Length: 252
Ligand code: NAP
Image (cartoon, protein in one colour):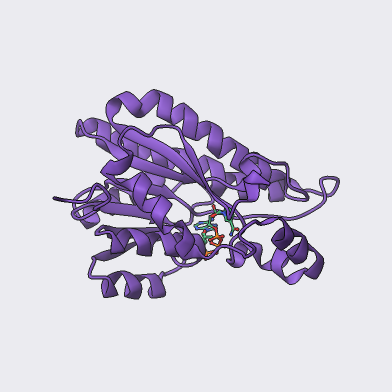
């Protein structure tokens, strides 16, 4: 009997898959059987090698996602790569740190653009292909602990991550009956480029570690199981949910 978590024959479009969490997710989906289309502005050399080593096909669509300008053509190119898209993971994201009193409009727009606006219009473009083909699909948004909490010195990041959780619920409400599952994963504190500043600040690093029941930072591979679940038939009746993968952070 086929496992309900099997992704054989599926195609996953993952944004920002050249590094960090996107790379971990792409690799986990490939190991579960999916072919991977990576979309982003950096050539994902390592990810391509790892996906191919897992025996899956890999394609790259070059697109800077800070604006919606490339969305339509990039989604069309991604759909052509392996004959369609079954799973979209809106992972690409960025962060700007500054006191709220000093925060600039550029700090605001740069983060909101990629983390929220482009994620919405990518979801719309991919969902339109599914509706036109009268079929469903899976969308996974990458939320954050700052979808629930305020954080500090990250105004636009917190706004974008609260926003992505709201959008996850809105899109689930609109699209669940079409067989499109829209859900989110909320990673806790993970070792990636996004958290280099936090991890190199000894006091912040200690304060964060002291609050994580699992007593360690997350690693990109820790997200794999959640990503496979939300991409697979095992989650067909899961809509508008957010799955924290946080070493217990929210339980504290
Ligand atoms: P990361 O290592 O900095 O990776 C971010 C990815 O997004 C990279 O592939 C990056 O491409 C891409 N990206 C950023 N801006 C882009 C743009 N304008 N156009 C195209 N691609 C762009 O950080 P990460 O931690 O893996 O972050 C991945 C996601 O997880 C983000 O949404 C982040 O908010 C979220 N997250 C992370 C943590 C954590 O603890 N690390 C916790 C919660 C949520 P380049 O390499 O070209 O910059």
